[in-house]
Length: 189
Image (cartoon, rainbow, N blue to C red; front, side):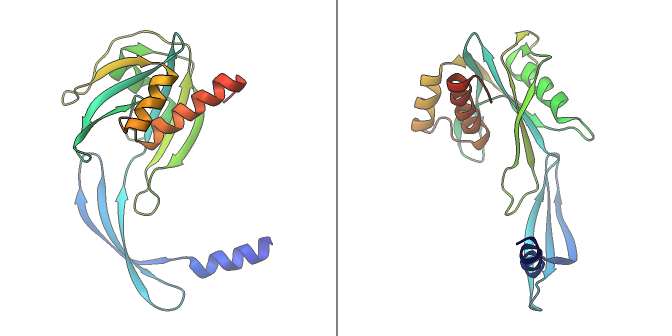
């Protein structure tokens, strides 16, 4: 099986012939790669490069800490767990702790990795790390200067209702809600 899998994967591998930078922003960059397919054809791939991000599923007195903010790409307000991009060379756990305090005004020194996943591997290389804590202490809220946030601690029932209503619709927060349900049912993540 392993030999067959290796051979099959080799058939699908795409070698980069050319990479053309298109845009370089503060958060992302965009490049268009020309790739050689195994059958001799070429194709183009539009790729968003992202430094990665970290998020925290933080429970305060049995409720989930969330922030509500306007998300311009969606043209609507969203309720999400605190999260933000990694600074160059930054450890994801350090970023998660920083974002928790900056966005919610709570801090924690005890974070546990729940999962790390690629958000949209069809066109982006962003890897998101999701951490858990149920040991939070008061800290100092310090959102980015262009960030307007409303902080709330919600029950599981509220979180599930917000998912049904579309107020929670991002993958990291939905993952956190289902991880929370697992945690409540089993005591484990």
